Length: 352
Image 1: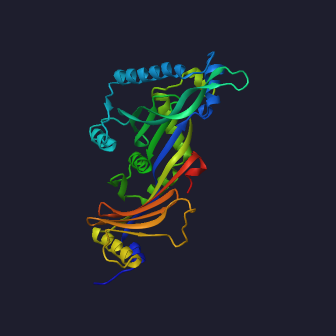
Image 2: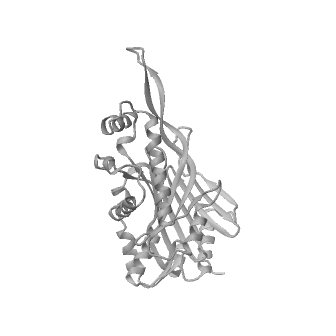
Image 3: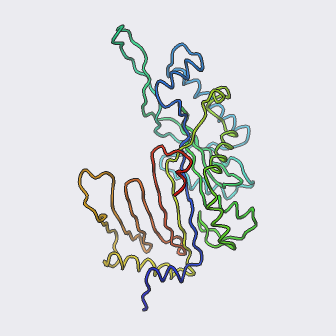
């Protein structure tokens, strides 16, 4: 058997090589409602309440949930209560097969999850000795409403609203689904590779589409659906400046290198394992990064090569960034880079 280097296998056997944003998870939050003082200002100065209290949040939550159910009834949308351990992606994929239109709400899912909200505790003034309510951040359990949407430009996505004040939302978009929609609009033939792309009649145009997916397009589609879906804040609230801002919770970038035939990809992974480990076929091997690690070193630093059945995968972790490399559907080398950053504003943070 003639052995090939990794470089030779990539240069000679790859027929499509593209990279771009895969999934992006966004946090939609009210910047003026992140502290107890901000909440007091909302209820007392904006809404004119005498005392700011969590009792004022209950009616807002009931009205928001009632709007969601009215919206679903009016549009004939099913509300699905997720069971514990139920895979939401599987439910969504099942429903997507029968979706007839270009864009609409596919269904609404409900799940009870932990959420960072506000509670009230009683404090005693050191000057007057009288009791007063004090708002503080706390973790609570509440219903989360998942709006699974099919968008004309972005394909499947979801927006998740918390049903408790201050109604933080999460948004999940997929860059490859966006690329598929743009190829369809341009009349360019392609073959799908799960959520990726296996073959394309115009690879250069495909890469340009992925390159053009920026914060302007992402924010536009989120604002579009915020305007269409039930909203926890009134028009008067939004006019007073209580509007959602977007930040990046997690961004995943992917490079997909599609081989001319499955055997070429298998050869590549065999060579990667052989060149780096020289241990045959490991079930799991961990290698610490080549640096001194002490108890004071923050984060995790390691490389793993895992063989599950006959499909190996390579995992590299460095603090909040992870790289996963695996053989996708026996046709493509997929390299996924995931970066999780706390409160990263939507904007230039999308640029790698």
